[in-house]
Structures are given as C-alpha cells and as structure tokens.
Amino acid sequence: MIEPTEPRPASVYWRRRAIALGGSLVVLLLTIWLIAGLVGWSDSQPELQAVTSTPPSTPPSTAPPSSSSTSPPPPSPESSAPPVPTPPPGPPAPCDDASVNVVAEVAKPNYEVGQQPEFKIHVSNVGTLPCTKDIGRSLRELVVTSADGATQLWSSNHCFATEGTEVRVMRPREVFTYSLNWAGSTSDEGCRTHTRVGPGDYLLTAKVAGKASNPVVFRLS
Image (cartoon, rainbow, N blue to C red; front, side):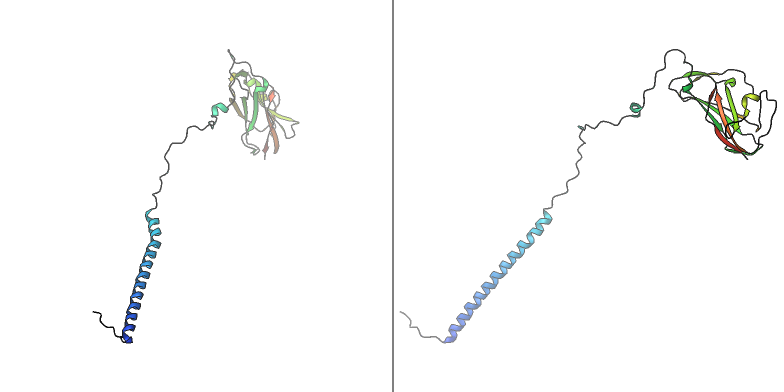
C-alpha cells in the first residue's frame, strides 16, 4: 500500500536546508583545516632536513707532500766560494810587492804636547798563497813629517837599533804588528839632536823594505 503524501509545513523544508547547509559548512571547514595542516608540515620539512642532513666536516688531508718537485736545492756556501789555490810543492816563494800590504796606525787621533803617541806598523800578506818575507827591524821604519809631507821631522831608524833579520812565512791574510812610542821630538842621523815639536797636525808613514803605507794624520795640541 502506498501511503498518501500530504503537503508538509514550510518550516520542515527550511530545517532540512539548514541542516544540509550546516553539514556542508562543517565538511568545508574540515577540508580547509586538513589542507592547512598539510601545507604547514611541508613548509617546515626542508628546514628540519637542512639541519639533520648537514654532512660532517672533512678533516684536512694528511697525505705527504709530493716528492716529484723539480726545484733545485739552494747552493751550499762551499759550492759558492771561490776555489782555494793549491800551493806548489816545496817551500813558499818570496813575497812580491803586490802581495804585501803595509798600514800605519796612530793609537789616538789627538795627543797633548809632551805625551808620547803610540805608533804601529801592520804588515800582511794580501795574496792567495803563502810566501816568505824578511820584515826584520832593519827593514821597518816609521816616519813623522809635517802636515804637507814636505819636511821629515823624525824617523824610528835614527834612534832605535836596526840590526837583525826576521824572515817570516806569511800565510794569506796573516798580519804582523809592531809598535813603539814617539817622544814627540825631532831626530837626525845618529840620534844626535832633539827638538820638541809644537802643536799642529802631522803625518805618520810606515815603511817595510821600501814599500810605504798611506800617511795617517794625527794632532798635537
């Protein structure tokens, strides 16, 4: 049997529509909430992964340096020094004038009148081989002259003994030094007369076997 349908009140239809609309609204809100949750998770995932996926730092390599370098080693001092001449067999030959250097020295540049200046002779071998030289007292001389070098005032050979020889084997760069004190007066042959010199500038020259040094200036005041 089919029940007869009767028209229902309008309020029934409005309630049904309200219920259907409310259900649709709930479904829409749930859908939006789920989508927002999924989007928020996907945004935070790269940051989390960036933190957890950072690789550990690689330690510095400890491999030994390559041995295939072709840079030449620096030269040693021995290899850069000039070769030393080999002396010929037998005793050293006599020194020639070019191998002998003579230097005069005054201990101080200035003395007072009445003091006794100290003079020195330095004789050295400036050659490359040993040689022999007579540098005895008879061949050594110290001479004091005026400042212009024109007048000789004193000679060590006037008043000091000049006998004897002194033959030396002089090695390269070896220096022989002799000294004496000057009384501050003039001299002549045989050391007969003496006159005290006054204040002023003077020159000292050393000689060995006729070879003279450069003159040295000193002052009496």
